[in-house]
Image 1 (cartoon, rainbow, N blue to C red):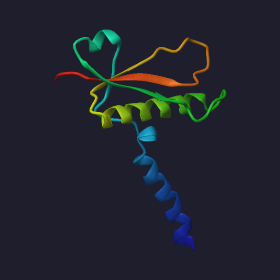
Image 2 (image 1 turned 90 degrees about the vertical axis):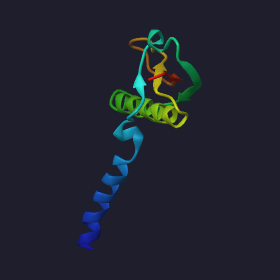
Image 3 (image 1 turned 180 degrees about the horizontal axis):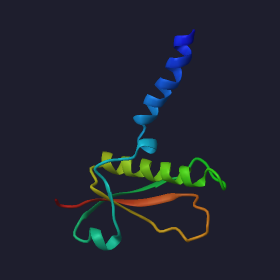
Image 4 (image 1 turned 135 degrees about the vertical axis):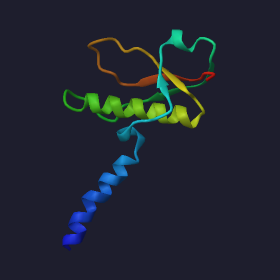
Length: 103
């Protein structure tokens, strides 16, 4: 039973390391619209953060942005351009364009 009590948190931690929303996404660069001139738009991606509020808003937004980047990578994108949010207003949806740029 003690082994199970130790193994469960370790397994949960390892699972979190493989979750791109928590661990981040490599191979996709955040860019501005000016930086993707001459690149090919592959798709537009939308995702709603799963949590809101004064405590969980930032982690929820970071998770949603990472998941958008993961979806962009799966589509073959090298860059993402996130729509700008208005400062001070809550974000209910993360929107971005997934772009493939030449190397």
